[in-house]
Length: 520
Image (cartoon, rainbow, N blue to C red; front, side, top):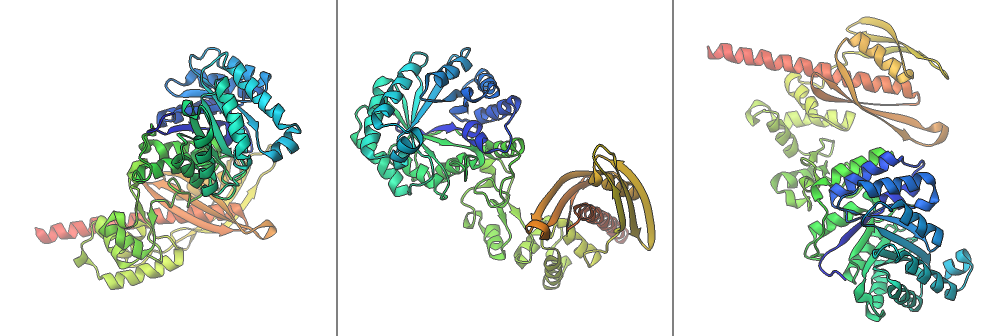
């Protein structure tokens, strides 16, 4: 058993994929597998080949694509499953077969409807059969966390004799507490013959939010392989999160002084790739990779960060591949962060009155929630947040099955009314094209997100938009029951922010010209 190194076993493509509403294509799986290999994952569980022809193909292609990472396939303790794994890897030099069987009393009686003697025989036969084709065999005691310690030791000793090289003790339903899970590993290590010949592994589910804690407890008592997924994907509440375990081991080397192959700087990129391909958004407050993980909006926190990052950041964003932390300017932000942001924008303290400026900022922050740098510039140069350049006066759309959508849009600007129409792939696309016709500027929609507010018939949609305009990014937000109208209002707000910033840039140029004239 390896004592100073943790093996990272990723099951995003097997246990993680089981939780998705639709299966991933083989091409998508190969792309994720390649990213996991680049991340430094040691073993990738590529799938469950006997389950379908497509899963068999995916396992086969992943096995061929991997260069340094060991491909693994899952098999029930049945000959047909093990044969399927071997066939999928027939052209692969090095691979692992992961076979499993339920061992808890409730699973043996209620699910398998058999007795303990038959379970032992099936487990031994499965490992013995797999041993004919590979010397890398993992055996999992499904629902180990609710299995009697006596039975656990008995079955582990039996499969070790047959050639198992990795023993996985999963908390299959997320039932264990860290103390219980650690005690199970301690008992197995101290009472199982031949345990020194194998690697002990954890596989924890997050039903009670304890997957990572249980995994760390397993490590403390002898586990040297951790089975996890990117972003914590998995059945029900998910699996142990790879990025969280890696970040804990990086940050708390005093508690977990083990080597591993994870390239920390590739975590964020890998997380985003998996989120995009699986179409599962990452919750903003998700540990390590969530949008808010390195963002600060509280005035007290921001002040501390500006003085010393370690006051509120125990892990630097650059460690996981992010360029830096974010300072969100909100109603909770204090004077120090506003002063800091103004300095970053090139404004010296002598050029403005901080208490007066902060008062203007607070009013704007209360009004719109999140204040951006271009909002600060407008307050500085224009003395206010700026008026709306365009406003939506009227909107009519027509669409239907197998029909091209058409939008008629009327915008008001400086007492003038502009009307036009456009067609597109859906009512929102058509509406945006009509708006762009009126504005007559090179605007690129860079992000579009709808969030439901409320439930059922009473729900509304919040539309968040970002656009590229004159090489800069501007944001818009609108809420409404009519999602097409809310989308248009959000789009127009982003455009108005861009127009206002143009006025600010013109003010800057005028000011520079005056300064030169004074100098001459």
